Image 1 (cartoon, rainbow, N blue to C red):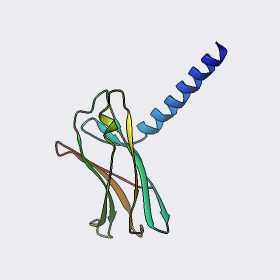
Image 2: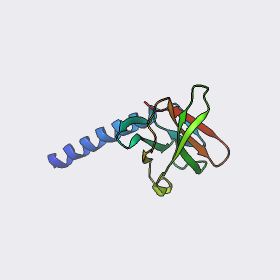
Image 3: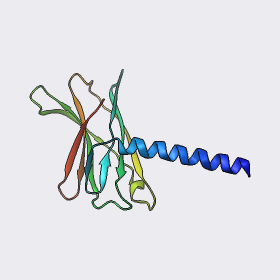
Image 4: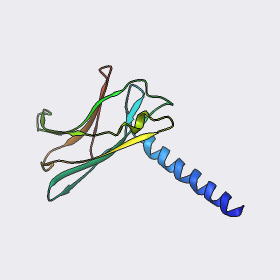
Length: 128
């Protein structure tokens, strides 16, 4: 019984940590939020990882797309890569869907991740 209680407490703490991380994002659209993306460089180019999470029990809007965008000095998009977000976000009880994108280009200027919802809403967050 003690083992069950310990396992339950560990599960509750890990869920609370996941929820806190998901809520750290300030960008949301159509019942979906975009968490702070993480940017790293490797020999192949830039790698961007992050999550799209529900802000409620069911997303109000569908995902039209998630894109990784490199910006030029003038703020215009100079390179772009699509991020595949698994359909698991539509499954009942799902909270977040995760993406991991390897680009062919290196991030020599700011990189942002943008979420487009199916009703025209679009939000972007800078990758860190």
